[in-house]
Image (cartoon, rainbow over the protein chains, first blue to last red):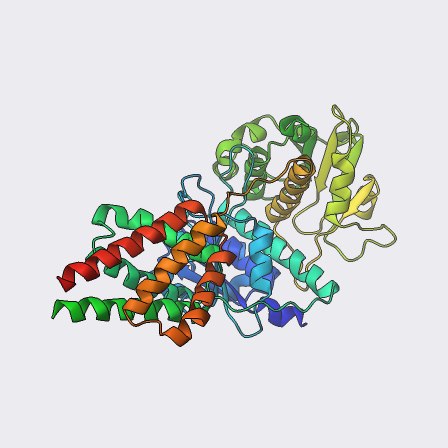
Length: 248
Length: 248
């Protein structure tokens, strides 16, 4: 297993980062840990600022080649594995995992797959809607005052990833687990389901979000696969057809 | 074992730090991880600067109460356990250990003992003479460009410490995972789904078994819970109702 190729699968996604120093620091970490690229969703800071460039040190190329997106779903649509981070306590039904478990899952992805590690805003993290885009949500749980600096959170997660990768390589374990469904396709499927369930009156506008979150959490825990998403879409299509046939 | 007392044994020692931002960031980490105190050996920066104070966020008290020393030996003379960090390759005969091993050793110290975690200068780390003051020297080994930002190195070591401490505490604690759905109820729910899917023509008699097995596998992997089975039954009931309404 080639250590370089392996980490070249990973990209760091920052959602609405507001600190020049933080974005520069994260670029340095991308270089430290041989990450593939840095993606920025609607940044509220300037990657060309002196502050950002100085903090990046040898990671300036990650700043200069960073890709920009207007929403998280766009930023991860080519990624088969999406892991989001959560520091908030009010994540509702969304299940949190330990970093090591989720990172292991991502490291088992076959070569050539893209994996996104998503970090939220400095002041309020990722919204629950954004967390649901990911197949796995991890939490760096600390005892009390748990608000880590953004770049410290990135450092901790990348180090954890590096450690697991090194130990996997040393154990020379070639693990193979099935590829999970693409985040975009799963989201489209769930939107499709949501509109059908609204039509038949199972969901009401004000309950839709909470109930769909429960369904998505179940599918995420089950690490739903592409062929299973297709199966569900087939069911939805057939149900819609049956309802329309009766209608005419 | 009391988690607070345990980390209250630890202090962070920075030798000749030169960055206001770094020292402020490390103060924030001291607060994040409930460290006892911050000690500074001949700092070449200003802990009262705006930069340092701003980066410290809720850790300002660590900056304001930081203790100053003129040499490392003075800074650690009341500590029974001293762990130094090394990022350089030219450490000669000084043996390097993995962070987890050395931190475990420190965590086994009895209550009331003081433990120092020592970090060197941003540009050239600790001298070999300084490394020899410590009983243990640890290295955060990275593949290539290994120069981590000082506060990132502190974040990684403190997180490792926190993880080991938590796992030591939880070793005797039996993890409690939510109750899974009752097998009988899950099977009844799946039979209900199967008959609906046969009615709408998604399943055919000869494909029903294989496809329902796929759905069941997904739900089992997700360790479906009782309330989720109820949710699915609710969906099935509503779909059946919508189909019948159209029929009459």
